[in-house]
Image (cartoon, rainbow, N blue to C red; front, side, top):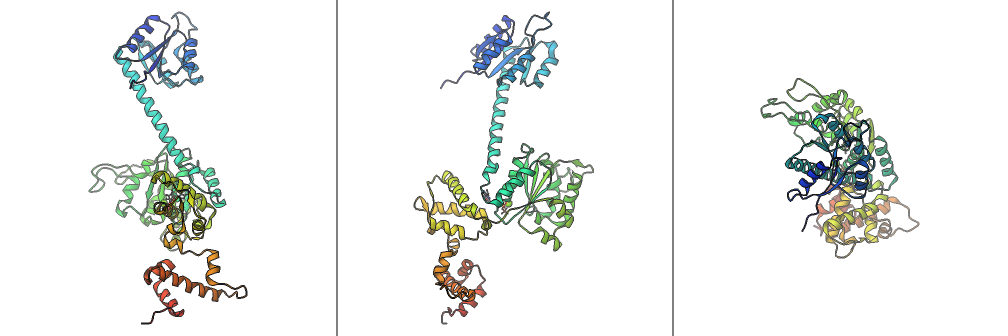
Length: 471
Ligand SMILES: Nc1ncnc2c1ncn2[C@@H]1O[C@H](COP(=O)(O)OP(=O)(O)OP(=O)(O)O)[C@@H](O)[C@H]1O
Ligand SMILES: [Mg+2]
């Protein structure tokens, strides 16, 4: 396979210079394709019509005694304005270093002095190529990350979630602390990431910390860092999470699990915006946005003395409450489609959708594990499914026992005249217990799990309904 030759445009008013550089570049070792231009208009005209990897431009493009002579800086300005995105490299005499520096400020990628050796010229070009490659890679990466955490990736259409999108959009760029609450699996981390990756801080780090996951004796140094020798194991100084997140966002997950001792220190940092590494006498200024999340009711933790009231108020300036999935059923169908698409790619399957019966079961289920549970369930069902459609029997029994409205009517055989809730509930309970015991082949402990009641409660009800086997 022959590699495409890289292309260089040489802009210099002196024929000898163009000839020399061109000889270097087109030599066997160079292997570049070269086009020459002797003035700015000519250079702009070719460079807007054909792509070049590099443009080498002289600083002074005319006779030395002409006071109005155009310069490489003029070319640079016009080339940028024309949207030319080649690497522009300035060639200067030893005396024009200031101009070369100015060119760099204006967006030239590099400069070198004339006369230049072939080796030095190749070195400068290769370095520019490497830089361009890295820049492109970084852009791709950033776009990928941006896309991953764009709003579009939080799948929702319920008014409650749309309201949350509105809040994210309004507050994303402020440094205000945000507290995200919601049951497990509702998407708290997803919302935190959306806040960060859509904000002015998006190019700085997003650092998640699980406040309950770090041993208490290490917490302080994890958060604030330590100096060398601060404690026995501290053979090296270490940056804390606050410093790592500087300029970006620190995501304090499971904030309710943070021990009281650290709560005091966190409050101080939030108020003073500076940290003191363990064992250090100095403090360090930090610029960090805090987003916290918790599945606990923090105000209850405050009432019970497990969470400091002052910290609670400092953190809870702006709160986003993500409702459980069972309270926004409009999102279920959309999420199901989204996860089917996601896992079709990942599992290399070809599932087209969910049968109406299975969908009804999904809509009726309580979803204690919220979106995470739904995602896991869809993945599992896709693996188990025989055909292109996920059916009721592909769903796990714990979900499948949930009772749809039609089932309830059928099950209880409600007649229109008897409206006693008490009577109807009894019939329903008895039927559900019977089914659970059938499904678990009489295993009462397993039946309790399906029924979501305790074993004593099951035994009591079985006795009440005369379901106890004769012993
Ligand atoms: N609206 C949504 N759209 C798409 N995926 C979602 C949505 N909500 C949650 N998820 C997915 O569900 C999973 C759980 O989300 P996340 O980790 O953000 O929840 P959490 O509230 O932080 O849960 P926990 O309290 O258990 O830490 C993730 O895989 C996430 O991508
Ligand atoms: Mg989480």
